[in-house]
Amino acid sequence: HLIQETQANYLRALHFDLSPQELRTTMGKRLVEIIREAGTHLGTGFLATPYLLTTLADIGESNLAFELLFQDTIPSWMYMRKKGATTIWEAWNGIDDEGNIEASLNHYSKGA
Image (tube, rainbow, N blue to C red; front, side):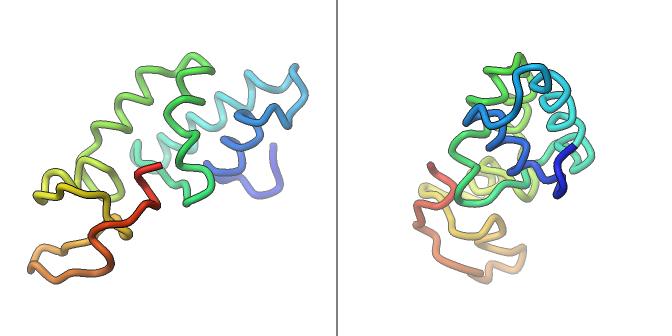
């Protein structure tokens, strides 16, 4: 296990081949567990999000990648779409239920 067990840390270790080959399967399983523990929501930041879906596919978790892609509650890309977005927002909750804008509604961060 990693010292800080986060989706991003496991993801980077797997994506950039920073872990010993014999630990990849175990690390991939732990990444899946962490994602499931988060209610099948992503928990990555600007630096890891671009690698999330492809790395899941690379470790044999394409179904989970699709589940994350089509998740429609915060945090998710489809929540933005569900709220009428035509761009990627800076914050997952860019527009709250009352229509208040929380942050930029046109940001590169999660569209990587």
